[in-house]
Image (cartoon, rainbow, N blue to C red; front, side, top):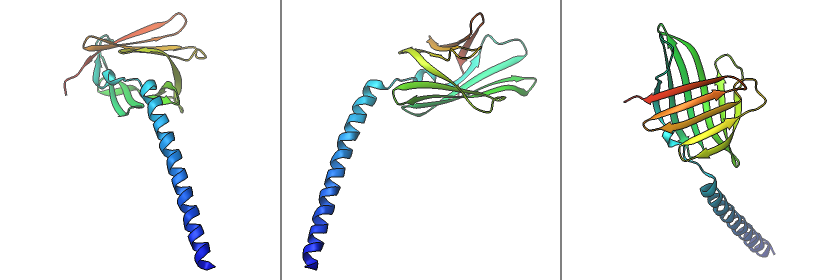
Length: 166
């Protein structure tokens, strides 16, 4: 009787394992198909960038890295008289089907979230209409430079960056 119980237990375990494995394979295939249609490529952001249109006496930089196909990380900072006077951490991440830009200025305890509302091969726009400023953040590739725009109701600030050789 113990041999029959042992054999039945082995058969049930094997069936359950095969069943779970098959579900995982199907689930993985579906996810991969979805990722291929949903993924965007923002590799044009990658690198070390210096702002060209900064106020005299200040230097602003952005550094962008690719963490994975669904996550880019960035840091922006401004230097004046050899001191960092402004810094923000940025993340461009895919959450489910939406791309999100998170920006955390040095004086904020939590990141501010912007949802991507449009994108093309070398441009994206993220918005958070609940904020006073900025409501919109736009990045786009412009030849060998990148541009950015932050805008609110009546205020706009433009950024032009050139890539640093490293």
